Image (cartoon, rainbow, N blue to C red; front, top):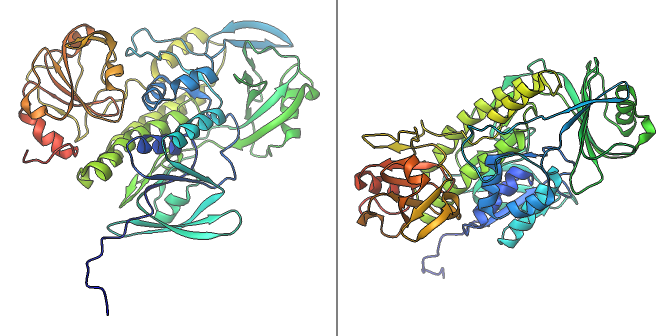
Length: 501
């Protein structure tokens, strides 16, 4: 006789399945795991992706990594960018800086980009994920997925041929430019080839070259660069390629060095990793389809100009992570997740245009100082804002004289609070929660249960002006208001309380 006792609904295997173990996927998984979201990452490779690849960590990315608890490890693993050293006819022809800090950039505790080989960044994120209780499975490839109104079912095939099905509340495709997730959804990438020159990139060991400079050899066939990678004895090689015919092998990499530098081919004592790419600029028509999302190169691809690729993927993850956490763990309405596409598509479009322009300009000693100032002004990502987002509500009658609006990254400035002084804002914001700043005013009763700081002075108060500022977990200003009348409805949208409370 059937058991008449009602059975509880079946729980999915995980809350979020992340497809792809690169920096984007691992950043997202760390952010989710620290929120108590059951997160599993599958990576098709038998190990994390090799190679230095995206080696530049920009200021805004370092801020996100600081919040996730990995910036100290990354700082120890990396270094500032070394000065550029131009070579001509086997002789040194002067040093110059690729990037000069912008004195007018938003204040950050990480004012300059940091050089870390991508494989090391991935290792640090992996270790953090495991410490937080998330899981990572290498040698596991997504082969299909289906979804209903309540969950996603993914078929995962291991490198030994074993297949299994996994269920998840949500799936995020962070599986690169040839994304299986995106193809499974039938989402089209729209863009163009851009007419940009192809390039070879490799991690090599080179004898007879100092490690205090980023070496560049201008050449009519295309510049060649060798950048020392901190924490290793390797250099990252970059070389523009003329013509369509090129196959990257250890031999062709050595041939490029011999043809374009004063070094003989046998100066390259080891070629540890190599790749060849044809730059294009494209973006997915959608970043979300039902319960499945795209992030990083799965959502947008662009040339590696300005060191933006890894960084924009990390920012995708930092934007999506807290929203999934609010919906899964705190009962926020599913509509909150629609803001991910709206906010990140616009940010990606700007970055694609910037990367294309910088890749086309190249890294040349001509007008070096002007180029260095320009790169310092546009590459840090500290000025990215979401002012046009539905999650940005600015209800003040008078805006800040310095121009800060809802949607902007909050200014990381020193502040005086009722708890004391001497700390910068981002120290107060660290962690996965919203924070209400009551600047030169008392926090309202409606704020009970929120993390609250009453700001009574200091540079932060001068920049923001009097009012209530609700700061999102990704450090952007969600709500700016003179009074608490808009606070309740905003909190309900974010899953912090019911609209009736």
